[in-house]
Length: 80
Length: 542
Image (cartoon, rainbow over the protein chains, first blue to last red):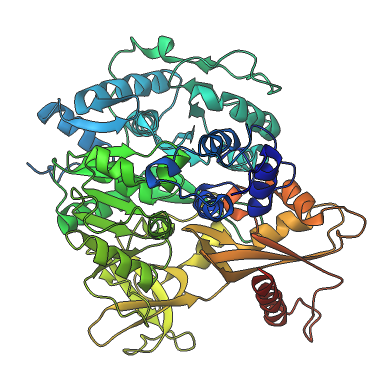
């Protein structure tokens, strides 16, 4: 599994949500297009992108760029 | 113990249960619960403060907050003081909130501290200063980034914590209980006026039909701007049960842990939630043993989703309900016991206070079994019409053509439906350009008006298309693409300043010119064909 960077993650989320210029504070409810349904789709797409399954009990907690990045780092997907 | 039949006002059940089961939980939030006695006391204090401010029969108070303990307090306070409440969507941009505030002219606005900056922006744009802004959970933090200061009188809990009991409620059953704003076809939101009598009629049927008891725990998934929130909140209060608002976007997207942790017995939401639960692996066999009833309304229930629900949760009764805001929450209900994957799920039979008429468009006579016609609703749930829109009210609330000699009003739903041989009603579609996006009503003309007001847009048309998650909006525009680096993003950003998130198009297609019919108007049929072809191309590329 090739390691990805924070920029890769931001670009992936931006592309999936069709939101340009994703800021570091991006998250569900505060980024245009990142609503509850888009979040479900994003998590499912992210599982494929990152190659790791997201436990259902965490899906409702990984709702910002920052929390997603932290979790992906812990999984060894994202560089530190 | 059931509610006495002489209680005609929407809020009276809370004071009834406060007297008879004072310690029973009424509303349970993430930061604590209020028993019926505590809820009545708290709402009563706010009501008295409203009365002291001059709030009386017929007055309106806007509520800018999502479903929560505070929201229940605010709704009850307005009603107990003798007025009605009108919810403002917390996801709306300030300009949209300002349009509603200007139209409704509320005497007071209630909110929570985190939303004071948004409210201040909206009030400034509206140029309106209500008698008071009441912040129900405590004073806001000073100096929120860049927001204008609130120039109206602000009251916080310290101002009403010692308020005496409210004076008697002056309302009668035919007074308004709430006004709900929905998308308007000309770009201006319209307020649906619902009376205490209308809501009381529905809640009585609901309590009997679903057997709601004080032991029940009802979910609160819907925003207060959506009338199924009345089913959740006042449906619980009517029967002495408890309501459990889902307070965060994450809880709403992934309700599984919430249902399990709270031991929810009665679920109510739009069907899109089932799709989210299936895809996120929350709807697993045997999940949610506490659930005994699940009611879905607000948009068509896809047969595949109904089957997924029945397969996973056979212990839980499943209902597909239907009802426009104008006829108070729900007017038909269908218990789903088996699903034919090839056929839409029926919307069922009318609630006891209503009658549904399916009339042939030409003759306006009842359509025979199996024949589609326009669906009209009559009875105790038919609301009072649109706030300050008499022309629109007369157009949608019409005299019964079958009984022209008596004053019998029908609501013209604009929906097409048919009745089968057994009397069960089946939804067919819309007779106009209204679209349901995840339960939210969207008039495409509303979005088109916002698009047309953007600089550079020459022509705009908004179409309903079928996307991966159900109905989606596709915007077709001519004009603005030239010279703009990312025209879709620029357009959506500008549109988000004017419209709530659920009204933003999912796709934007740019044309040199939109196709025209013989009359020189946009040919929506041809345009839809072109858009569907572009969508297929996009799908193939992915």
